[in-house]
Image (cartoon, rainbow, N blue to C red; front, side, top):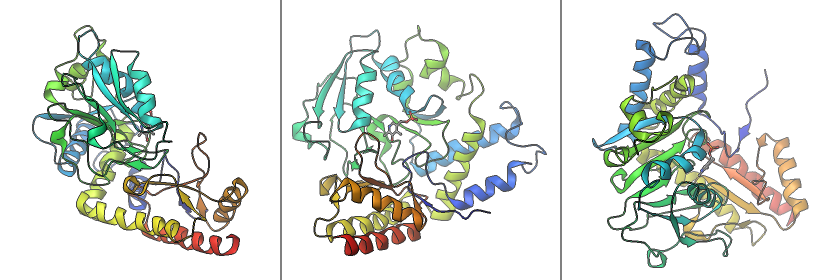
Length: 364
Ligand SMILES: *Cc1c(COP(=O)(O)O)cnc(C)c1O
């Protein structure tokens, strides 16, 4: 059998090995059921128990207060780019504020415009999306229904270290690429959501933590599958949910709670892993150039460039030869990107760091 390599893909991305093994072990016959998770009804007791356990795990991990619901939706993060304004500001006089700090928030803002009136309160494009704004730069509307942010810009590797202070305006956050990587204070958010396929499971499910008053804002004119109110009332089971993806999400959150020991521990591990790569960048005398300004460096996605595009290519080719794969930057920006999500073992990061030092010595 082919051995597993260290996979630095930005998404879908590396999963914990123990989770994959558990899923493999149970795939043909789920214990106590006698059939595969792929074969049973979403209305069956065993599946219901899996869905409830996944919600319970998420509630524990993120310390979700009572007045929030946890939803499992389909259509990826991109569907939420439209569903959020569709449910919260569409057909109302309300507007929303958007902070554009990278490719994903830019896309979120452009999709939101199809549903309602939004204001871009900060845009980092001119500066090449290398940082987040400081609070004093934000031109917030005190009556905005929400302020939209992207906690970690997956493509540019730019992450908020401290969430912006928005007073009474609730944050709505796309945490697709850093959910479960560090502890969060959910009470600041009207909606905190993430597609699963970066840091929480396989593609196919998007988890949404949503405050009750945000659930209640859905207009009655919305079709059921687009209405937070109707989806919440049916506990995400208006129709067949992505059963297998929810099952995997349950296994990943079990792993975070039991094997890792919660998000404080996960955060420390992630900080240490990220420091290994950023130290290699900083000590390379300019051979490696990181994209993000230092204060906004992501602990999940580490994009950087070498002195030439030829060296970028050579770096990826030689890395691949020693089992370090999918290190290419996003097609829109090029260069190198190492995504080091929760499930990337420290040993993989150390191997990449050692390769970086070696490559710089030979080619610098
Ligand atoms: C990957 C990603 C998305 C897109 O997710 P889809 O599930 O493919 O729609 C959106 N936002 C962020 C921050 C991402 O990393």
